[in-house]
Length: 368
Ligand code: NAD
Image 1 (spheres, rainbow, N blue to C red):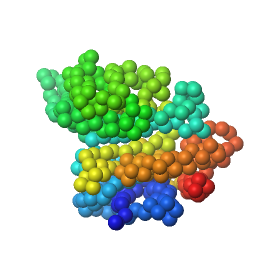
Image 2 (cartoon, rainbow, N blue to C red):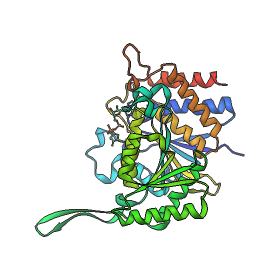
Image 3 (cartoon, rainbow, N blue to C red):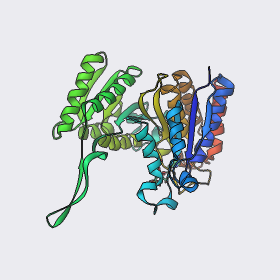
Image 4 (cartoon, helix red, strand yellow):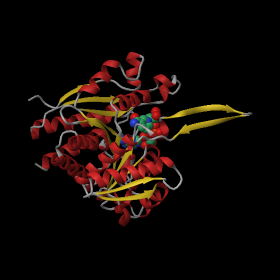
């Protein structure tokens, strides 16, 4: 049997720097755990624009459709700010998400014990936190028609349309219930059924999917504004949260800050199962290309490394190996190793991107 395949797209700014550390981790699993991957690397974002005049070449798109999982660094940077919208670096990422039809965006918010004091909330509120937000990613108000800025009488009007079909809600609800079964078996669905018809339909469909196929999972519904409040009041009450594209965008950013630094946050975007049973999948850190620190060896590679841990768990059914990698990250943090973004206490010298990667490798070795 051939090895599972990975397409790596480091992108721009700190993307290549953090991805270099992920490459070391991937090699470690091949050498020490007999878990080898066939890895290809290609361009995305500004790097692809510089080479091909487009932020994602057609051949790269085609490979992304064929491989078992795509791992992306980050795209964008000031150099590309004045480009036409159609060729901006972000369009490369959007094209991947759209053409792979990645409808479920998984954003974990996990608070590593060693970083609990780093959160803007009290230690007791966040210590031990382990929740995941499933955001619908391919529909809703960011895509609905009509959209645009129109003339209306003697002024302009800006219009966006929130639109969800039953099947779009059904498939993301299933993704959330499946995930919950592998975790705490609890789903909270968030919308605004009190003021939005799309929210009423969302609630109905989620309940129906639950009653028909997932009665064993505990389901609750919450208005998204209350959800935002509960997330900062008592985030540990949640296990899996499922919500639409707009609310998910905002709620997942709020949840992200529960855990401290952007440099710690991984994500996965999943689509329908392929012929081999694996879902179409793109894994990427939540952060951007961080032009302010790019090229200085300061970037925290953990978000990207934890994105690979998610790939192990959700694409390759290697939950045990994902646990191993997360435990190594936990150990390194507990030992006080910190990149500059994680520095809270005075007198602690930050390590470089590569030193953080090496420390995680050493912790992996120590865990064997
Ligand atoms: P950003 O996430 O790149 O940076 C925000 C702040 O967090 C910066 O101060 C940065 O130094 C810091 N930071 C981010 N990641 C870090 C890491 N791993 N280690 C240490 N510090 C880290 O967001 P931004 O500054 O708003 O955007 C910069 C560029 O990235 C823009 O071109 C934007 O469009 C793009 N962007 C891309 C993505 C993506 O590729 N998915 C996401 C967000 C922004």
